[in-house]
Every structure is written in C-alpha cells, then in structure tokens.
Image 1 (cartoon, rainbow over the protein chains, first blue to last red):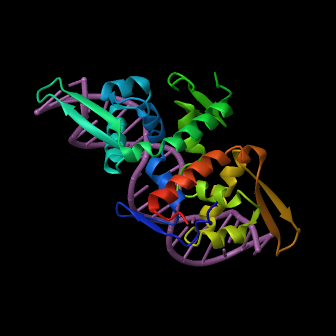
Image 2: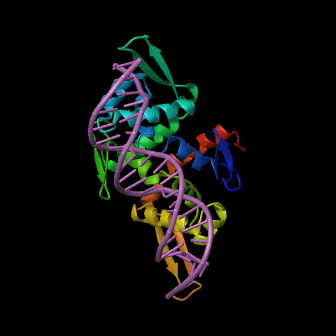
Image 3: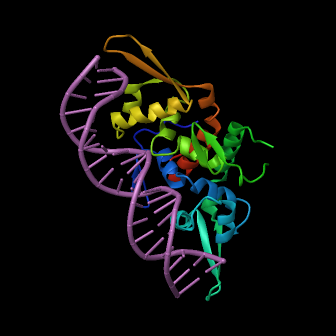
Length: 118
Length: 118
DNA sequence: CGGTATCCCCCAAGATACTG
DNA sequence: CAGTATCTTGGGGGATACCG
C-alpha cells in the first residue's frame, strides 16, 4: 500500500525518530497509555473514574501519563470548579480520535490472543 | 463490540499485566519492535538486511529485540551454515502474522500523521 | 556474518506520604 | 478530588570492543 519506512526520520515535539512507526510506539507505548486511550474512546472520564478502571496504576503514574498524552495532543483536560473538591475531565481530542482504528485493531488482537472475546 | 478490559488481568510468559492492551503494548512496544515486525511483514529478512533498513539501531539492540520477539513467538530464527560466514533468517510466525492488522493500522495512522502517505 | 561482553545513562514506573 | 513531592529500583537502549 505504501513504501517501507526506511530513511524517513521524523521529528515530533522535539524528539527524533527513525521512522513513523517508531514514533507512534513512543507516543502511545508504555504500560498505560494504550489503556487510558482505550477507556476514553467512547466517553470522557474523570481522574477518579480512570483510577477505578485501572486499579493497579498509582495516582502519580496516572497523572504523568495523562500529562504526556495531553502534551502530545491526544487528550484534553477540563477543570470544573476553582476550590476543592474540583472536577477534572479528560477526553479524546480530534487527533486522539484519529487513533481509534489502531486502538480497535490492538484491542481486537489482544483479546483474541487472550481468548477473552465475548 | 466487546466489554471494557478492567478486572481482566493477564499473565503471559511469566509477566503480569493489568489488561490485554497493556500486555500487547509491552510485547510490541519500545522503540524498535514495531519497526522490525513491519519490515518482516511481507518477506523474511537476514540480520544484516534488517540492520541496513534501520541504520540507527545498534547490532546489540537489534539482537536483543529479535531475541525477545522470538521468545514471545512473533518471529522464527533459522540458521544456514555451521561455519562463519553463516546466514540467519528471521520471519514472522503464524502468531506474528496475526498481528498484521495492528501493524497496518499503526502504519497507516503514523504515515497520515506525518503527512507522508504516497 | 551475526552476533556477545561490558559499561553506562536515562527514564518509566512503583511505594509512600503529603496538599490546594 | 485531583493531584505533588521524594525516593528507589529495573530495564531499555546506546557506545565500544571483541568473538566463533
């Protein structure tokens, strides 16, 4: 469909990558980012809702991952209220939504692999 | 299409993951694995061919990544010859091939993102 | 040709405690 | 409620040199 990706270095947000796939893996790689994006697919979620959906993530790690996803343009962060308890809502941006086909393929594959397709 | 992945911990090759997507990201995450799988999609390749396709990877890192992909069942490793210079060929296994839809989606998305679609 | 062996640095990410 | 602040550990991955 398209040519191999050699000799096509890419720079995004100040980081250099040997090829677009490598860049993509860096942007959404790691233990949690794919999962976070997955949970934000259909509807926006609050910080505490995400935490509940991912019981084994620490609040600090969740906070860092959300910050990076926001910086890379995948998600938006909206604050309601100016005094605690405040409410913070995370949602996919248009750019984040463009990633949905990858999430779908990844989710389908990983579920098939684990044999957990309903 | 299927239910969210919370409360569905998974163990694979001795490692525990909070959800299948997290597992998948760990298996094929990092700077290089996606790229290696991408290059092996259509035809098997020798070690030196892969090295040429990824000029900025070191031989040591390439070797390690290939070992991990082989251990996780994505690729096969075939040796021709018993005395140097030997020839080693890497190819996708059936399991590795099952990952192609993810690679396709990832490749398409990353190319679109970079604006490099031919 | 296809790797290993060392050394090293950086950072992802967990544990724990604290806060506006 | 939604985070920060510190500390710590593990492993990814680069540089360089050497080997069967």
